[in-house]
Image 1 (cartoon, rainbow, N blue to C red):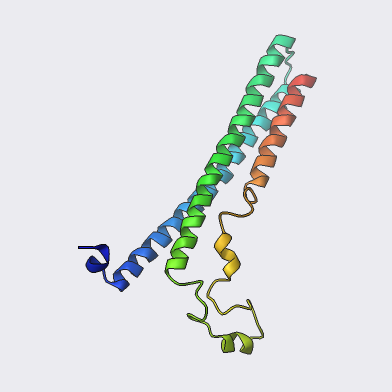
Image 2 (tube, helix red, strand yellow):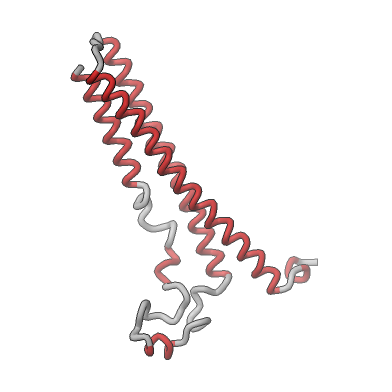
Length: 168
């Protein structure tokens, strides 16, 4: 007995809708994690910078070297973890697009006719699909677009921490 015989078409659509909702929830949680993780790392690095500049500490060259190495490793490891985590989000986005394709949201004139689009003045999209066809590349194009601010802020805070320790 195949899956097509076990589940009706409506049951399969209902299952896809549940998976679709769950994937969107997971994607939002993953993006929130990226925000929290980048904020935490930047906070630690900036706190180290402020403490080393403000405190009455004097580091010898050996201590500076160790602190700079630890900060460098922490910064690079954080950036690597953010990139790996973002690749997982991209896979989630691609799965969401596949489910949208299965549900027919990119099929021409499935829910919207060309006449309805013309009546609306071609707004918001020229094609008669629920989603514009260019959204099918979600998760595969613009690889680190949403991740760039996180990477840049972690890198910037790492450089600031290194400079603060080196100056002191």
